[in-house]
Image (tube, rainbow, N blue to C red; front, side, top):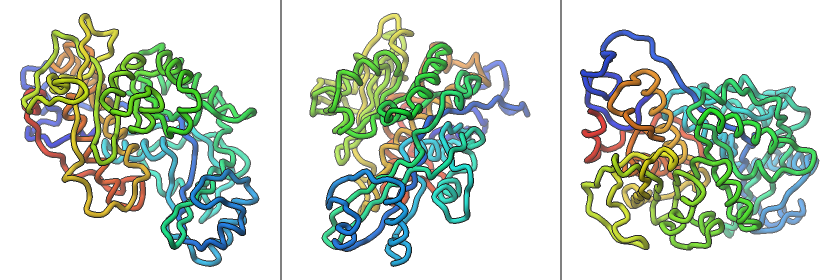
Length: 432
């Protein structure tokens, strides 16, 4: 496990020498992992003319669902004419697990489907070859037919049109979920798309089975909302669903508005805390927010300037570590915010996956907390039940940095480990 952030101490674990297990001893550490339930999907980007859009019955500037035959025909023409710019393994959870594994150097278990017969150069081949070797694909469920494909077609005017073929990506069966892996995980993560599968597809039932196992063993359940269009169809369904199943909620400002009715991300985060324990909200050029709970006895005041927003003095306790509300004797809502790293990139090459990158950073921090607790259970870090290793403010900084790395490359998946993030004012406190 790579611990999040730059560490100056010579010991592997950032704790003091008074802990019961000296960390310079050669002790085989216990490892942890996270689990994710995903729709296996390949993103295909191509530059085309308006005639191709018309020939394939697509709608310029919109998303259209197409069947397998139409997807094959479209892909064949794009390949033949050399129009494809990029092909990447995709999918919200696939991206998140890959980035988590790249950041942490730790195992991420993928529950999903995969084509039974894989040919060199096929969609499935590209998916697996662009996935970190630390992502455990040993539990993939074999299916007949292709995995999902998302075509992004860019016309000369710059307009983007989308053609989506889901293939067999929603055919995951509940029997493919391994309960023993879920109950030992640092987190279980999935996307909202899974809960709106078509009749005959059982990926939603697989997700519910995994969530029940996670909840029974107090494993954090992490939901990323995916798209505002899905949430705004029935926001009350999602509020009830989050309240029943979810520990940590990840969303962008549009999804936050669809869920809560608040355009202001900070107010939306506050509203979401009615239903979950911790919120990560990316807000484009405004940066990102974290919100959650901490017991009054364990609050740590910020050493940054106290800031006013929709909630006055909202970042007053941002050096605190997130906790489940149920674990707090006196729960206090805590918020933090950070502006885009370096003001944002000079040139944004890809907006697809920036939120997934931020979520991967949060998952890394949560997994680091479990890893540290397994190996140094009597550390000062674990005198109370925290959801993460770092504070709200430090999570903001780390997630922000990862998002920046995704924005400056074409792929939504990190191809290398993240450069060390900056030190923070509270870091010396938490390293003790």
